Each structure stands twice: as structure tokens, then as C-alpha cells.
Length: 335
Image (cartoon, rainbow, N blue to C red):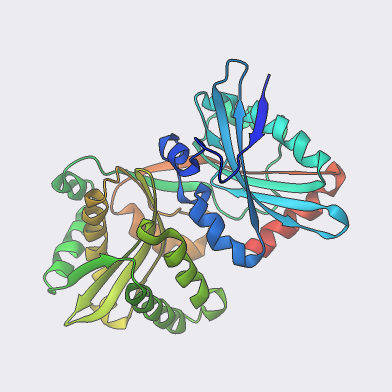
């Protein structure tokens, strides 16, 4: 029997982020900070834990809930649910949560689970959920084990990437990391310059979003900047959760591209993350099915890492006949 308990922010012994850090699939999208970041967009967080008959914790879920007219609501759980003591009990636990969600006006739910994909887990999830009509992410990524020494991490790179890294490092770039307002402004300037150069202004993270991430995650928002003669030329923004880190966005301006600065950025990032005690790095996803992603995917693959399929996106609707419409609408709005 599965019992779900809603966790209250001020209840003793219910430190959500401490639980998150212990989960095998820990990721920043299930952190309190991510919920704080999304609050301005009208999402409110509900945090739940599922317990088995012996009191063991089977799963945790941070659902971002948005109210709809007539007492209805929808929920989105990026990075969740999180597995507890028994990852394969996740799907039955989620089925029990959905029954409660429906009884309180829920009409649509989508999650993106960061457990590794397996046929058994997919079959279990399909008993209560469906694959979305339009997916937001591919569900594929590159995972790096950062527990080894830096020379070991370099040895995993392709020979061409090692060459470009060496060439970029000869340019005399200096790297600094932080989460200050100044770091945020410098990174935003790089990002906006890249967007103008590539004509992608409509898909750019708004300035308020980058500032919100910096403030919400505080020290767990790591901004790395590469400078040439004091001027930023390349950088990235990474989110931390427990011993894991997620590569959220990066940008290199015209001056940095001439120096291949982005190639030097990744080893500098690995060193910075190791200094923070991070042992698992998610390179922010790849999308082999998209021609538009081929260049970025090639860049990421060259640094090594293990190509991994997550259990990924699943959704649910009530009534079930509305699934194609609700699923497509949710996917298109987010993409």
C-alpha cells in the first residue's frame, strides 16, 4: 500500500533539499530553488513524499501547479518524480498520486523523470501514463563522472577536441566563477550578443529569467566566465543539486569564437565543479533527431561522457479522450 503525504515547508524533519541530495536521480529541477524561479510565471509548488507499508520512502515529487478556471488545475514536474529506496516502485506510487490529483480538480499532468530508461520501468509507467504527443526534450543526454582526476577527464575527449582545447588554452584566457549580480550581467551580455548574431532573439531566455535563476539558486547557480584582456568572451550557467550539476545555457561571442574559447571553457568548468564536490555532470541534453542540434551535439560528444536515455517525459489527462489536445498544447507551448 502506498501513502502520499504532502510536505509542509515549515514542518520539522522535512528538509526537501536534503532528500533531493540523497536521491539517485537528483537534479536541480526538483529543487526548492527551481520552484522559486518559476513562481513569477504563476506556478506554485506542491511537495509530496510516498511511503510504503513499512514506512520506507518510495518516491518524492515536487509538482509545479497552475490553477485554471472552474476549479481545475494542471501540474508539471520537471526532473521528477524522484526515486526513493526502491526506484522500480516509482510508477505504482505515481499512479496513487494521480488519483488524488484528479480528485482535487487536476486535468493534466506531465513529468520528466531523470532515472535511466529501462524496458521494465517504461512498461510500469505506461500502466498509468502515456508518452506526450509533443515532447519538450529528447530524453537523451551525456553524463560525465567527475570523480576522476582532471587528466583522466581530458583523456576521454576526442583527439580533435583535445587539439582545440590546447589551442584555446594558448590564447591566455582567464576564468572566474561566481553567482554575483556582476557575473549574471556579464553572462547575459554574452548571451544577448550570441542571440543577435544567430538571429534567435525570440527564443532567448529573457534577462529576468537569468537574474531569477541567479537569485533563486544563489551559490548553486555557478556562472563561469572566460575573459580575454579582462573582457568576457565565453561563459556558461550551471545549476547544482547535491553532488550533481546540470549545464543549462552557454554563450560565446565573436571574439571568443575566433579563439575557440568554448573548448577551453569545458575543462575549466570540470575543474570548477570538482572544486564544489560535484561528481556527476549532465551536459544539458542532446537531440540526435534534430538537424538543428547537430552542431551542439557534436561539440558536447567530443568531450566524452556516457550517452544516456532518461525515463523521460510522460503525461496524463482527465478525461482521457482529451489527452491528444492537452498533450500537444502543453508540448508546443513549452517548446
